[in-house]
Structure formats: structure tokens, C-alpha cells
Image 1: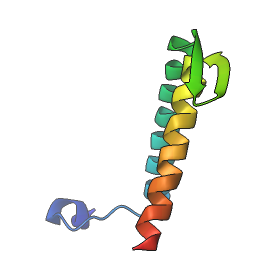
Image 2: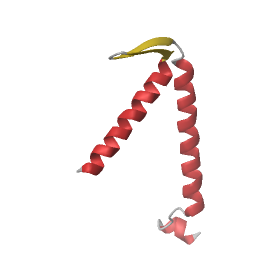
Image 3: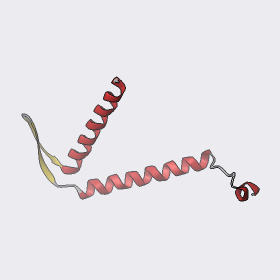
Image 4: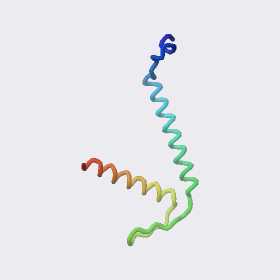
Amino acid sequence: MDRLRAGTWRPGRATRVVIWLVLAAVGLALLVFFIADNFVLVDVRLFTFQRRMRLAWALVIAFAVGALFGAVASRRR
């Protein structure tokens, strides 16, 4: 209890795990809301490729491909 008053208290491992679980749950909830809000059908065209898909999935796929290319490009430097 003296550590709390002295300002030397630091979060332990269990506290960090709980914080990460809460952040993961919030992130998952935001993803679910994002997908539910963008459930409109759109046409996706890339050169000769044409596909009709939900807007949310098109955005998630574009994000994943961009993140993958970004990770590969950062490792090549």
C-alpha cells in the first residue's frame, strides 16, 4: 500500500494481459460494426478482373494486401 502512495506502483503482468484483452475486444467490436455498416454490394474491377462483393470485404482485403506489401517493403531495406 505504501508503494501506491509513493507513486512507485507499476502494473504487473496480469494487469497488462487484462489491458491487452480489453483492447482486443474493443478492436474486434469495431471491426464487427465496420463490417455490418458497410454491407453493400459493389463492383470491384482491376484490369481484367471483375467481381461483385461486399464493400466491407473489399476494404478489409485492400487493407490486408497493403499491410502485407508494406511489411515486405520494410524488410527489403
